[in-house]
Length: 338
Image (cartoon, rainbow, N blue to C red):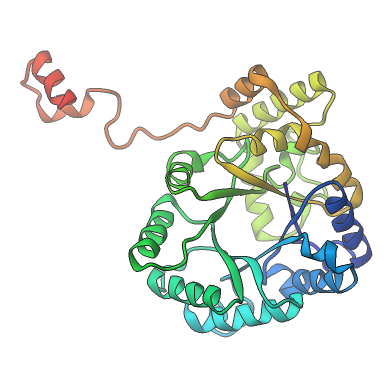
């Protein structure tokens, strides 16, 4: 699994964050994920200080990933994946982290205003210059992912090797297009928010709003939207109930069950989970060794199964009957199988 550091330096104090990182590495973890926008750069700066305070052999064992795209300032040029912004963002991240090269440099989101060729060209040059080892993407649709990969292949540029995407028992929409595109191109999926902002931890009660101090209890438009979306869906509560039952049967916690389910999905390379306290980390680490079994996995798959729209054809045969209302059943069958 991968340790997400979004709240380090803001929600989590430096001493606690250092303890969390040390415990994560001691338990066998080796990847830390951050972004230039986390805490306005505070997360990267904290990781830089952690690196400077630890033995070189320990530091060298860490795979360090960061991201760029989202607003880092008030200027119009402080957002996006165009060359000027990425040039400044990359140099700023290297400085805050105190390193010469970033192991995995990810585009935090799709930029509709910048040609993908320009973004990929910059990333390719950054790899050739030794500032970046590998390139990744984040929050891309299946179409956007395929466009980026096809363009990079066609132009002989550095290929993105990972896609960081929201994925959990309460958020399985990426299974229709994003995951198939990733699998078809050998792109590793890094699943973020595997606990659905803490909803799948079992710390919330149906009919009761999120309490202050919890992830969904933060007063922000983003978390308010997430809370409303999660709490209003009956399927999410049914999924949480199933995860809780399975946790009781396995002698685990709902969080561990939810993390194990995501981690063992065929498409997932690593699961990114955050910990604001050392206690949270220690509670979630056992998920890495938890094997749910076929029956429990099947129960979770069924209760959380996404309900796709029937676009474009609807139930089998509807399109054919609409286009050929006067044709016989055998003629429609022949048309369908062609």
